[in-house]
Image 1 (cartoon, rainbow, N blue to C red):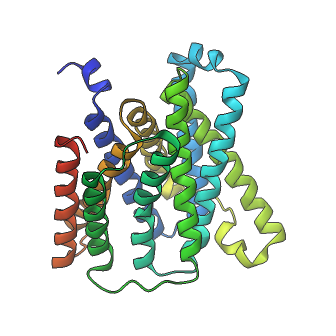
Image 2: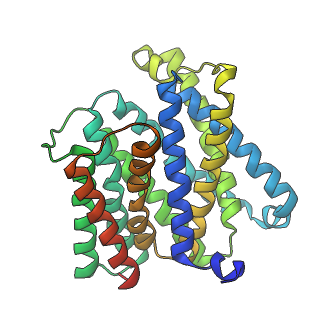
Image 3: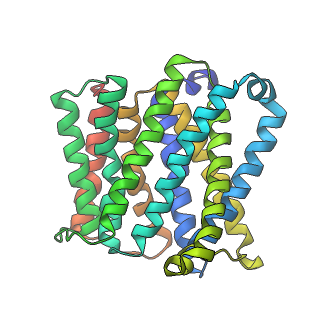
Length: 302
């Protein structure tokens, strides 16, 4: 298959998005294990992502950047502020709930995206899609809870609200793609730019006025021995965002969200093979359900 064909292939784009996203998660975990401050790590990696996309846009996409109207830029800024707020809510939620709840609720974007895609984009909500989504969520539940019960905690409301924000970002940008010609790289550039500026500004605001969360949102430069992690995470994060918007250009928001559920399976495989982590029967069952649902989603055109 030619590269030009791959560019418009929805499975190839979602697979690339999921792979880059899984790599970003693994590098995030490695950084945290090495003592990186979560928000500082996110800000520095976002700066690397912005640098990579700035160079790419300057070399290959300058005409597209100049052709983007002020109105389009304003909409992109607004939508990506919503995404940045969702990232902040996620980090607040991390401080108030268990790791089990974080893993399960983080995948609740499947539900919020399907609902918003139906309301905003008019995407069909047939029985096959509902069943496939349910089986995927069941698989994620088994993978993240290992069959244990789910106990709601205070921080869960932050994580659920964050899911709505992330879904809104993807669904409304998909709607933009339907109405105007817009480069996915340009959308990615503005997403990283807005996220970096907003989160850095918010962290400074919290550090000065809201001492309760100052430890969560304070900024400190990471040591030089972690520079390679920052650079790698910045590069793969840029790749995940670029392929997310490429996927949204060639596939529905529902398909993109459902097929990207292969990400936790990828992360689990790497964690088992290279990070010495253990997988239980329930996690194996969950991963199998996710992969099975992904195959059904793709080949039956759910």
